Length: 212
Image (cartoon, rainbow, N blue to C red):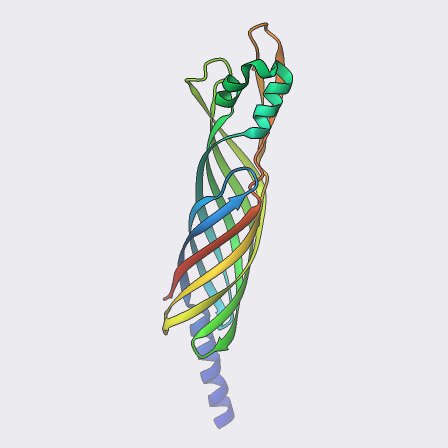
């Protein structure tokens, strides 16, 4: 009877723990291939299955304004380098990147207050692009691009208390949203350009996580 009672207590404790939720705020530096690196901020929520594993979801935001050098080269090749400065203006791009992911994290105790963890995720990349009109460079166009994404990372967390910790992580993120659009020059000649945004790269972040 005693063994049954102990087993029952363990089962209740495991069930209660499985109901624990977690929320994290992360911020740091992201260096995608398409642009120069910059600030990224994100939120991650989840539920613990047991003491060392949880499923969740995340959303991040990365913003960058830059000149698309690849597009400048295509414009120069097709229309000539005489209009190089105009082509650079045409290639000015402003992006807002929103990776949406389903995530999983496994924790491994290192010491009484320190945990290592591995994390991964899959989902969709939502890219909002402001780009210059080819003929009237003072005006901007708005377009959305989408792609599948995935991410792998690892990190170290330090427990501040029973239900809170600070952590640092490094992750590799992979996604390449793209879309096509037609450009007509002053002579009425039309060409289709593909805008590919390689959002793959390394992100290094610190954050705060709490449990409830």
